Image (cartoon, rainbow, N blue to C red):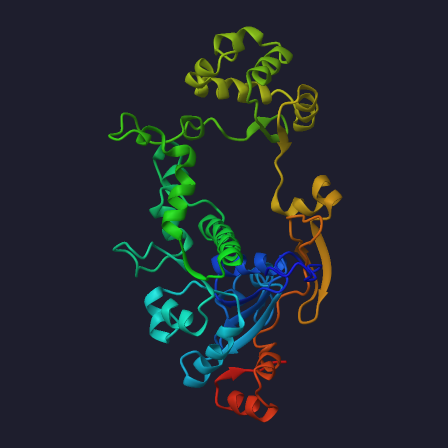
Length: 406
């Protein structure tokens, strides 16, 4: 990692090798980002493959839209880790990598023989990252955790219900994806520490605790004092008024935010007196009248079309955008201009569209080196690099230890 002469043209993590024992969404999203940054990622899958190979829109056998979205820039090694031969292969890989990431229950991976202590004995400098459902120092450490469960447990499902009359989930895998991005940061920080100290370490990224911290950034509210003097929650968000505003022909996202924004909005609408009565020139009085303020906003926006309001907001420098459906995003002028969506031909699926890496590095660009591989596509290559002969590889396939689909 400290070699200043290394070629980083494939990304800032070029030369870093990662063993990816993750599945579903949280872990695979994180390891894909690390792969986009240049790391060599070896994805270890069961002979049945990652569950996400069949979830979403199935584009071909074992290759779904979701799997394609979070498993590019990885090699696929299909192993039966319940077999001694499969375990032996994984043990041979451990000394050759910088990072191991898994999202199994800790008790399960320890039972397999690949807990931190066993792995660190084989590779003392490894960064070993466990994505867990619950912090392993707590009583829930062995409970199963999925996105819905964590959304409910962290308070997000409650926050997502207007006036808290009915809890509801956010309509995206926000706990998985948020925790996955925190995992990326954790691995990068541990790699930086390793580059300075020469030492690896155990890293745990628990979903519940991560999402509680995420949710309470703005919602800790009255709980900030101990004992609490007021309720938790950010009233501006929970009041029910912070919603897309109706227009004559649909809806618009409009966010007057500063004193100047609100004053300009009411003045341009010919409702300056109404704005003054709602205290728009003072942040404290404005927040105290937030429900009435948004009710007035919605009444006014209903009098013009979305296009008319976009023109007005641009002129007044008020943040605003039309409401885009997911199907409309490829045609979004901004996204088209920056080429966020790219087209390619996947060798197993055919013509596909994908979202390129969004982070821009001026000198070490993130790259899509290849799309998601079919199950076991790299088994032969990886085992050959470990010194297995073609006959030995075939024998392991015949015994059901590996899946070799090169």
